Image (spheres, rainbow, N blue to C red):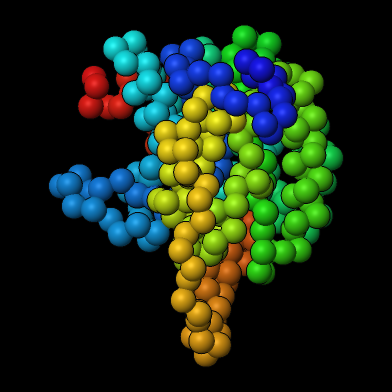
Amino acid sequence: MQNGRVTSPDTAPESTLPRWSRYVAIGDSFSEGLWDPYPRTDGTPVAAGTASDGPQRGWADRLADHLAERRGDDTFEYANLAIRGRKLRQIIAEQTPTALAMEPDLVSLIGGGNDILRPQADVHGLSAALERAVAQIRATGADVLLGTGFRTGGALNWTQGRVGIYNANIWSIARRHGAFVLDTWGLLGLRDWRMWSDDRIHLTDEGHRRVANAALVGLGLEPDDPAFDAPLDAAPAVRLRKRIQEDAQWVRVHVAPWVRRRITGTSSGDGRLAKWTAPTTWPPSAQ
């Protein structure tokens, strides 16, 4: 896209200076930023790639960091309404009106992954709901950043067909409504298992750093790190016995609780509030 319109992959980013002054992220755990915790209130770090009940950073906060820094002395505000476990129609119904009331000039709307994991997912129905939400946001004059689904593997390999269809629809929606697209499907670095947390669904801090750079590119800006998608050094081979042990632990710690939530009709996000619920001068230390 040129100025928010679809372009070819060979089109160079136009500028390093963002025009947006108020960014609101809406979505699910991907935009909330799970497994990428901020340091504790006393300043001590939380190990990267581990679970934490404290505020999560993630790619959207990192994108806000980049946009705020590039605006220099000009004010930049950011809110993040994303909550883990939310399905797409919940995101649209619960978060979009709140986001639009903040009068943003940039909204990232990324969701659908939790829907696609359900056995009876209607990908074209999801896409239609997404397009209506994009049209609603664009009607206010705000720009929209959409995001493709990841290229999956391992136990989630069965979702690739659904994700591929959803991604194709996302690109078409972006073309019709002049939206930007964060292309996570095309990130080669995310095909490395070391970019993924223990639950194999959410990214580590390094994965989020790379996605934030890809978001800058999706917005037509230069990445903070031109080599953001460079592959890691080759990983050492993992013995079969250790791999079996790791798979068993993953099923016990992550898959079993997920299945229990599906059976009981509960969500990991039940009772949770969004982490940044009002436009805040960003970064917070700039206040």
